[in-house]
Length: 142
Image 1 (spheres, rainbow, N blue to C red):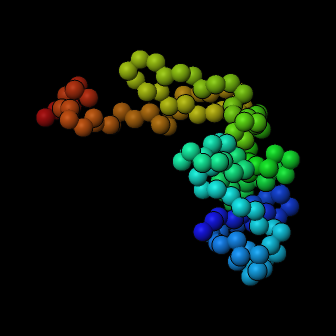
Image 2: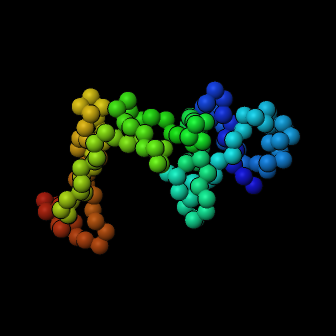
């Protein structure tokens, strides 16, 4: 079985699993609207080492670009730029690197066109498995 994306006016409206002869029969609609997509293709690479097909596995809302012969996900922010090699969208500046022993969550802020610390993702109530409450929260009482 193969995966096929129904593309109407350049936009993926549906993805199904079917045999090519089912598509060709017209039972699922106009065969010219259906374009094969590979579940194993992500960012222009086939994750099992095979031949990549159309840069990315199609998803509802993706664009099918005829010139690139590629499925492109929706653009997450106006400032982001398409990576021609992967057909993924990238922020115009790289996310800050993680340093030290503490993980810092970042989110994109389109207003400043920059990465900012995601305060909502910072958690102070997380207990590391295998550690004592005192080790992760010195103010806790046992």
